[in-house]
Length: 546
Image (cartoon, rainbow, N blue to C red; front, side, top):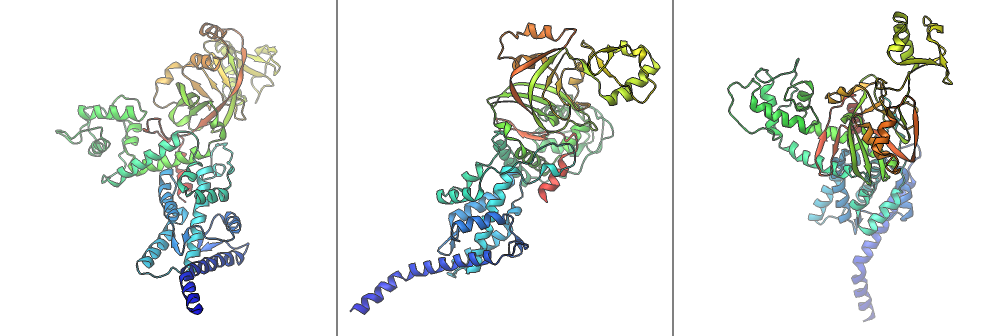
């Protein structure tokens, strides 16, 4: 009788004992393969290198090598959730294949097939998929927090310090597993700037449009601006694209190659929506924008999403000044609300405005313009040799480096350089305009006014030597000085029209970030795409897709 009861008890415990034994065997499998790993050989699963080797060791050691993504020999819901988030990473502008998606899918398909046939999954396969999914989590988490591409490895003057991880990904995964919250955990790594999540939704919507796309997006080229009544062989393609983007309804036309008035109205709407001058003319910029397919726009958005992940933590502040060079626009934000926007002029192609962040600390009203040595040598000295009255005509003077006036007639203008400084005196013709806004930096770049007001009406405003010229400096100055009630609009106007400089220190330091964003999403979730004026997107895209 006792033997019979013991047998019944053992049989009733058998499934649990089997699961315990299997779990122990799986722990040993994971432990042994990590112990056998060699320091100089990449940790890999089926010839797929694992990128987060350090996190893998730490995480599984802390768990005493317990598996994460399977239970009783089958995949958990959490494993499926992580795979879903890996697939969704394409809306972050990332490549799901970077996170072992192909091999993960092979394992999932195998496990699902085994389940249907009541075949237990092999221990080696269970260990492989566990390591693979954990590595995918750590790798994706890193890319979401600090970006995939190292900005310091790029050509050009980016001046962006590579961010360091502020989160322990092993601790994050342990918490995510315990709370069963993979998606919520990964979302905490997104840039805090609100346009990031909005950007994901724009890419998601654009991906749906891409799936329906059947057009031929071969680039249409124009040698000159096309106006209403003129003909061009690329007109049928441009008409199709305007209809594809819902700017044009089907209509009857006499000559498919003619640029007619119906198409003109559609082009104006397209231009207005895409930050172009809405003149209805089919110039180079408008045609280039119409050459962009949904896939091209997804690539452009992906690059900007990566740039958002590079942004410094200063963007967490309540007050900041953002200059988007590619959009020729300055925005002044307070508590994440845009209080002021203005058109700006930025550096021309070979005098590109750099990408960096600093802090604005003071304003200079009625500034002098201290001419750079290169301009003195290459422009001023030859001009003075030809015309001795050049300096007076340009309201310029020669001074020592301590500011003491020097008689221009005593200067040797025929040499290679002069031991003095040339500066333009305050006034309406001063190249810096009537005010400049200073945020000390190694590039000697700042924001300033300009006497050339008509340039703000141009569509292409990459015209300066690197500094940022602002359209409405008086209003901007008023906002920055709002903490001091004595700085009325009248007082600001008077300070801007003096014969001498006046330096005014701000009562706080305001973060200034110079960005290069050819895509962003606004608070309403509308996507905005701009020209790559410095041809910087391709290098980032190649590195991002590598």
